[in-house]
Image 1 (tube, rainbow, N blue to C red):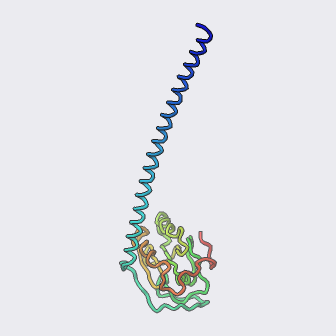
Image 2 (cartoon, rainbow, N blue to C red):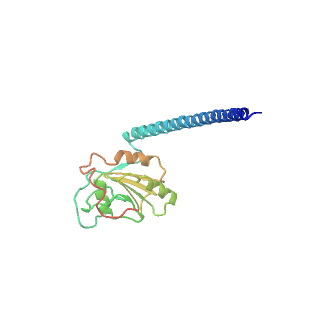
Image 3 (cartoon, rainbow, N blue to C red):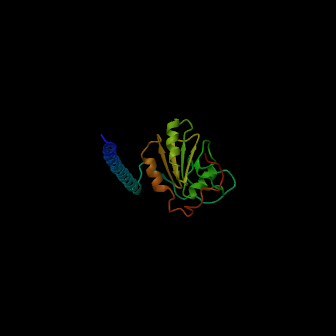
Length: 212
């Protein structure tokens, strides 16, 4: 075989190999695109399901908050006066009345906070979630989660509470047997930043206390 023929044969084999490589690359690209496309479609579908589910839960919560919540006690004629002394509150924990001129910074606390400061936070529209110091750790974690991303939620232990968990807003209180009670998020939705309060939306920071 002449050198020319050998060169031609090598060139033909090289061209054939290159062509096969291109076909393989195209097949690989098609597979990758197909897999990615399938994953994107699946991700979009999952995201849509999650968003629809969240919207449905939010709508349900809104409807529940618009109605009366079973077990909620209401208290009227609460004083908004500021005092510098301790106050003997008729409720445990208190839901309003005379209070210190400085409010409690909202957030999560591992130790009890001062009533008179916490009541001022309620005047600003906060919801105060208190619990028996002996409450199991997993339930405490559930309560603390309600304060995440919520600058007007105050969570703290409270020795002597009448039930394992008590949620208080200005003029309203709900006693609960455990942290997973479905009424708790409804209470938060209904009374957090209650627009009926004259100081709703005032700061729940720059007061006293250092949340965890």
